[in-house]
Length: 357
Image 1 (cartoon, rainbow, N blue to C red):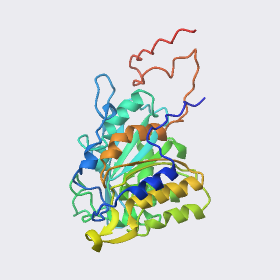
Image 2 (tube, rainbow, N blue to C red; image 1 turned 180 degrees about the vertical axis):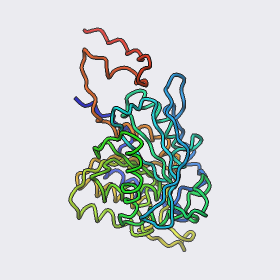
Image 3 (cartoon, rainbow, N blue to C red; image 1 turned 120 degrees about the vertical axis):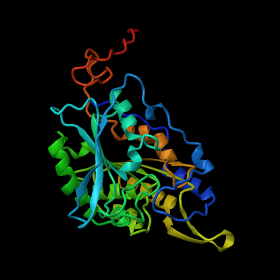
Image 4 (cartoon, helix red, strand yellow; image 1 turned 30 degrees about the vertical axis):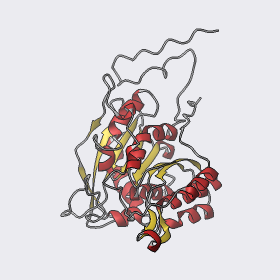
């Protein structure tokens, strides 16, 4: 019996979202591919919760050193990547896998997402499966700088081409180049339902594109402030979704109504390009996915092209994404009702069952 789903309290029906956006004034922002490096007042309302913090007694996973992966899909480039292995990983048991585009941003423990700490807490409480995380940065030439908090690589790497194009070349990086190395190092589940991708902005459309081309390998996606816009043709995805057979993809999308809104110029002289309106395109994605019967959830906040809200709700996005990972449930067996500790460690006590009435 699978665990009961964890409802996410941020879901809005599509009809409400369309009406709400119609009432929201457009914010004149420059259209950029990466999250803004500043926080607007509407972003400041989002705060990280306890799931994103370290806690005494919670087993901590290990993060490897960064390694370099030469690319055949993009000759002359390499991808920097590293791994997080939860303390509960047992090489005798296949682990789930989640790969983060723009990995440096999701890994950073002073950033908005803080994946290692979130994974530590949720795995310990059995709110997601034992999952190995991989953080991969966009491809760069050996002489170009590594991606960083101040430069995600839009002007110093292959990020615009890899992440925003709709072809399968970046999927080949993940599946043909990275995945074989990971399989040599770890015992990973071969079930595509046990594999997830995540990204912010252009990293989000890149994650979706990998699953779109290869749902036989990856079927779960977290998208924050996704760039489903006309940077390199990404605005066509809603039409592609409607025109194609439904794929076995589960996706959670987050965006803010003050994301880049396709306006150039000021006041009455401003021109509007609907294909470069981040939020409008995210709404269209949800509408298309919903019409085709995809397993989709979403939330629209008040923020800009920022990772503040995405980071604040990231733990809940994970709970929803992994809500039905297989767990036996037996009232007489406490095996899945204790906190999850590493093999060989003393098991954490289960809560006493409530008395029968």
